[in-house]
Length: 456
Image 1: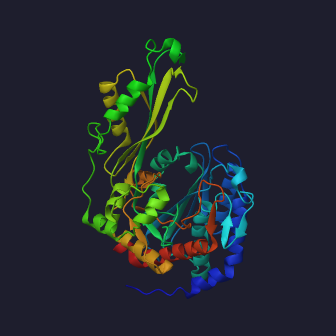
Image 2 (image 1 turned 180 degrees about the vertical axis):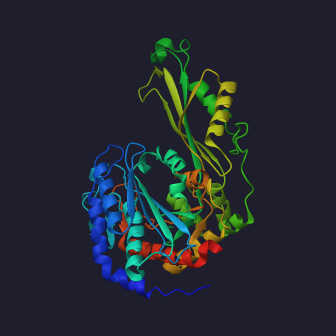
Image 3 (image 1 turned 60 degrees about the horizontal axis):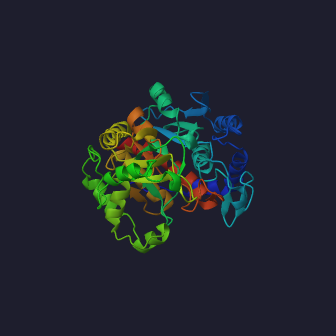
């Protein structure tokens, strides 16, 4: 394996650190709240100008509520067989509420104890900016790129990326790539870098059980007016056995066997049972590491995340009872197919209870043993001087399927933010050292992929 010298890039990062932080702070001051629309157009334009200044040929697309900013730099002339990498990120951020829990203004970045605190610092402005500044330094040090780089920065990620799949489907040739590389989310709790090769899909649905036209007094109308809570509870109870097995017909269909490569990756993941108990606040958990990660990333879940009926006042027979279901899906399962199975189960066992699909996102999975994935893992190991935590899939959900299923490209997620980035929460932050390490890592990815020619 080629040994790489990081002297040039380390010197460039050291010399440019102050300016890089100032660029990030300027971007963080620009509000871009997709839930309200505040500052979105202005931020999209700021991102476009930033990409242009760093050498990207840019185009702004408007497939939905907010712009997609696209940029591209072709490989230099001598790199005729160079691979193509698509970098993905988002410029929109979550609302800063509750404001009273922030220690400083969420849109006036403040540096404290080696961290930059502001909304978007970790999710996702600091992370995609690391890519852009890596390109700046590569061009400065070498005069051109040995790979073709494409970058797509969207403004709807925090609202579920509703326009992204159709946009990718309509622009497959434009976005065609050998690898899609995303930096989002936090590193491992130990501080180790993380390489994620997929995400679980998600399906959420609402069950509605109805009784009378309005709430009634339980003393005056008890034994007369039906309570809609009971049939709803009975339905939920029948959906899951005492040992946790989901009783919906076909729930486990389509799940592939765990590959030996994935099984080996699970066995290598760090695990601390006592720390897990502290994290979740429950002492009754008794798992080994391989079982924990398999359940988290390679098995589907069935969860009730909300139950609503009546109120806190005594003596009410509620008119309506609702349950909110959350199903996490793994590679090989389809959320629309799962919803159809769920709908059939409800109609069979409780035909008077209504069901409504709220949201669905397909799962995504990139094989761990692809040559280009081995190159990414080696890149992260060398750039961070630490072996990464390699997880076959994360437990949560991102629109990663647009790359693997719609675009048809391998996709990898390598977070650059610290474990305690507090994304979506007050006092969101990123570590300055993490931000600079992200620049180093993307810089190294560019030269490493060029040298490997995607493993060919």
